[in-house]
Length: 191
Image 1 (cartoon, rainbow, N blue to C red):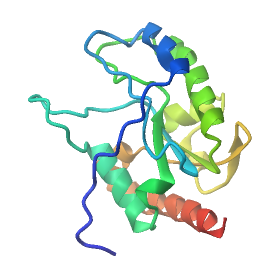
Image 2 (cartoon, rainbow, N blue to C red; image 1 turned 60 degrees about the vertical axis):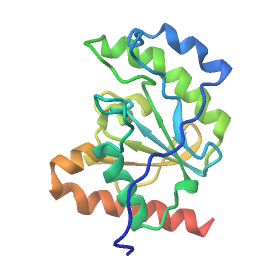
Image 3 (cartoon, rainbow, N blue to C red; image 1 turned 30 degrees about the vertical axis):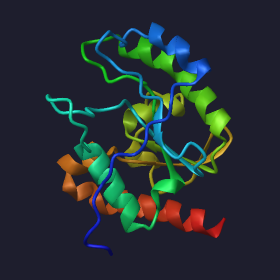
Image 4 (tube, helix red, strand yellow; image 1 turned 90 degrees about the horizontal axis):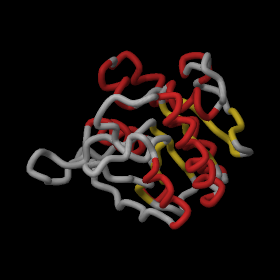
């Protein structure tokens, strides 16, 4: 493994015309920014997180947050290159205040579905219970019960794993998190 690996800021994807209506979302404010996705929009793997996190510090300098550090380190360890990955979100803005979670997720999901259909990836990765429950249409779905297996979501092969922030907070999840990424890498490299 390369001990010199440094997580990086991936290029953001521009908001497409069909995404313009997302500005109507309850969580969009004057201070929020719509983050459609980042990485390679032609990648074979689409990773879905619940929402974008902090991207700039209080002085406006971009940085790689802890979620992205953990995610990019895992990808590097299983030899997935940044060009293999497109990262997107169920919610396209970072929530800056309280909001009606069910309504916002219901509003946001069709945008995500259209985005995935446009990209047509080989694989989808759902990270965290929030994304798993939304994408599986099951409020009782949990990563701990679904990880380690292949599923089909929207007609695409899919795996689920823990949210990178959960792995940072609970290092005992690291082994399972890495097993999931290794499972994906093995199948991707066979294609």
